[in-house]
Length: 206
Ligand SMILES: N[C@@H](CCC(=O)N[C@@H](CS)C(=O)NCC(=O)O)C(=O)O
View: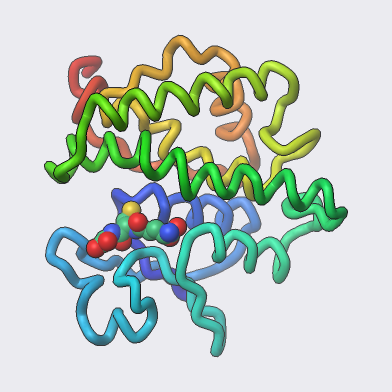
């Protein structure tokens, strides 16, 4: 397998994390997103959206981080990572939607401001980040994993940006249940960390 990736992308990190937890061998192809390589004709032929990550497995080309998690779960993982009963599958999907929605437009967007100078309203995206962290903290007060009794691809999808929240000036220290869940994620066999950048609150803490 090949993974087109960018080392500072949380969307990419979540796919590295799952590949590593599953112990799968793959080659990483680093796409220079700062230089715009993701908009080259060759890359657009893999993902017309011009975004990382993209997974190649044989003839299969799979763009989009949560689509990659679904593919890997169905193709290579024990069923517990993406349970098949309608209710359990719906619960996992609910949190994948949060990873692609509230997290992307909250914590990840806040980090885009500090890391890349992206034109976003910091106050708005930081407020959105705290709103979803509050919700997650309440859910994780009731259970160890976001979608139930065992880790699923929903946990994988949510981990990376939440762990690096401080880089976007989002203080996650008050969210005790979220922080304990991050520690549980980090103790999973095969866990690999998401690269740190000394920016935002992370910079002030350094
Ligand atoms: N829905 C996509 C979003 C991926 C995404 O936003 N990737 C960013 C990096 S974090 C990207 O490639 N940005 C470059 C661009 O949009 O030009 C996914 O889940 O993979």
